[in-house]
Length: 120
Image 1 (cartoon, rainbow, N blue to C red):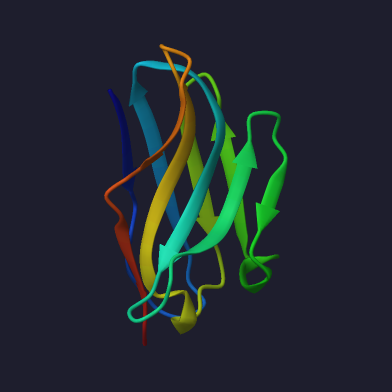
Image 2 (image 1 turned 30 degrees about the horizontal axis):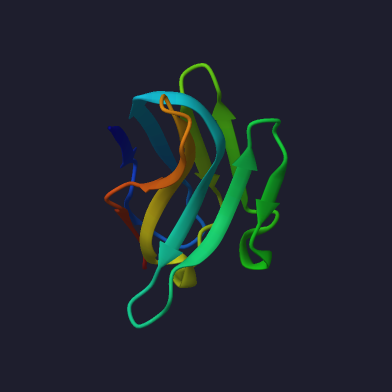
């Protein structure tokens, strides 16, 4: 069994910062990639940022230059630093881990989501 847990959401004003954290645990052989996705009301879930085990990163155009994703392979954690937040960043943020389990099967695991609200 694999668990993915997020933390760090909240309510902030435009221009402020938040840091989201994600931790994976359980029967993990390795983690290929970790990513953050978000879903706003009435919209589809979208990729925000993603990082591979080698450190390659990918960002949505809407967050480039404002958000930074990082990970600690040894601790099986990923962090999303969000600066200069805008009201349009308001959404539920989900962490995804593409895990190769102890039985060597490759599967995607999702956290329960954390709410980020940006409002004055």
